Image (cartoon, rainbow, N blue to C red; front, side, top):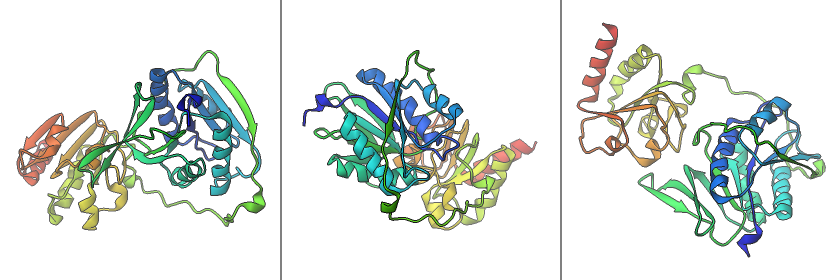
Length: 330
């Protein structure tokens, strides 16, 4: 396989027919940076119908082109149609890389169409690096339980396919290109061959207290917290106008629900203020935090989390929490 025959980077624009999924916009912004380094064009792929206002958001991320796909099989997501779609398009246009949001849908079809193309697919990358010497994308992700960061490449095969967790990159549109190439493709998939049958849709009940992804202030507790101390950390979060979150050990102890778990195996957060109590600083946790101000509290002065924070406090986490509460109440 001659890698020189494969050009440009694609981003799959996931949407529900009304709104673009935030991860698609995040990926467009990050892929724009990679394309500026590689000289490739950034192409957005949109299947089905989407309001013009939402398409404008995609264009504002600096895409060089948009492939609009019409045809049967895209009324709502299904594995077979989307796997077929990207298989057909990739064989025709030969992109160098395809980036897909690491959503339930993205994780479902990305490895499937990669397998059909006999290429590689990486999952849950936290960083994307373009290597000008090899022209490969280096997918960086936690490994060995978060103890190390692995760099994964697809050095021989193309396209390079990867899923990236929502919230990994910032949505920072660079502005619309003066000229944007628009391509219209019709790729139909026989509805009779779709093996899943849509019976209905029931939305999860929404609890605002569990929505930490968009919270500006996070008080996060880790393995060092005593079970009986949880209420005081809830109080501190409330006094700061924020929300409580946690690491995996707290979820395992069934003190807080999984939706409040921060990190690569949980929720990626971008608060203005993050205060971590009793957290060691495993890579798979800290890579899930992109905070304006990062404060860490731990009694171990050698805890890895102090390598990542803006301010570190060495001391008993309960005593520090009590002092913060007292100060905020005065």
